[in-house]
Length: 398
Image 1 (cartoon, rainbow, N blue to C red):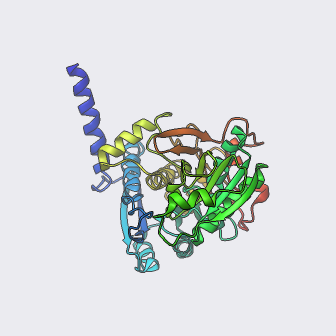
Image 2 (cartoon, rainbow, N blue to C red):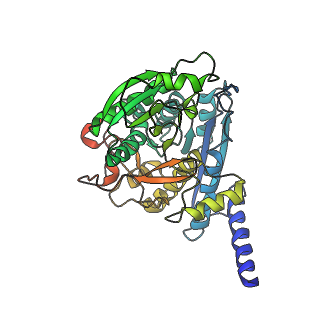
Image 3 (cartoon, rainbow, N blue to C red):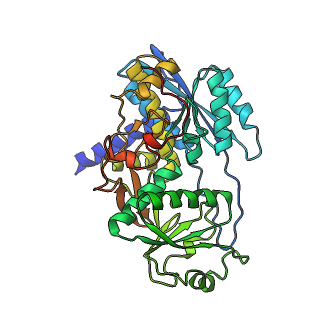
């Protein structure tokens, strides 16, 4: 028993030491890489009856852990990594923060921000020959009409998240869907992603509703049954990216049906209830280091840093052009603790990855769902496939 306690203490001490090493000076190495994490603070939306307070900041701690992990493995490869941190206020100058990073000679940026800030970062970085890793914006257009040659995505797109959810509904034969959306522009984008995915998998929208409640949800118990009458549906799909009203829908709809989408059964890149495929190990290390559960934003930043480190290892170079070629090479693969190796799509620089379908107390399934086949990889059943892409940029030459 005492030996077990000593072993547990040793493991915990090592994990904390690795986490702390992200901010500590590292020894000289033949390959030295500085990575900048640049993010914009989330806007405080206030607190109303149905609007929650903002969650704890997520993302930056993921990059910190990623650098700690990169240094732990890099010690055996004569590599060293350091993290530069830039957090821009809600009304701050994001372009200036990116320029400051690039002027320091940093050529790898992990960005967690909205779509416009992400594009600004990508365009500024391109002029310097730098690479940007989008760890925040889910907008599908960043992988399509607004894609960039040197912009890689570790955050899944709305299209990927919607497809993961609709694969599960298809498997369960919940084919008749009632779509309820909010009034924010992001809600419209999410609703459009659901519509596209519903059509893709041969499901049917039997009705659409818009949530327009001037009482900020105080009368939701009376409003929701009325709003969800008049259609025969197997599930209610909620498009509420702002988190304004969706949490009131489970168990409140006119018909006793499951609620899915932005509330109820949720599609996400990560959930702190994931424990298989070694996920328990990274979850526990994160909690010990940062004293909170790992969020999807943390995971996207963590795997972005790990992707850079793996690219440097394979390219045997810190040159961004060489690393970009390595990232889209056919033999590139990265362990992601989700049961399948993560790779980058050559046509839009989106990271292929499984999607967790979760609720408040656990993980229901992982997409792609068994039975959905693809000529290359089942992961390409999620999101925009190569024959569908409108991204105009060619992949880096091998």
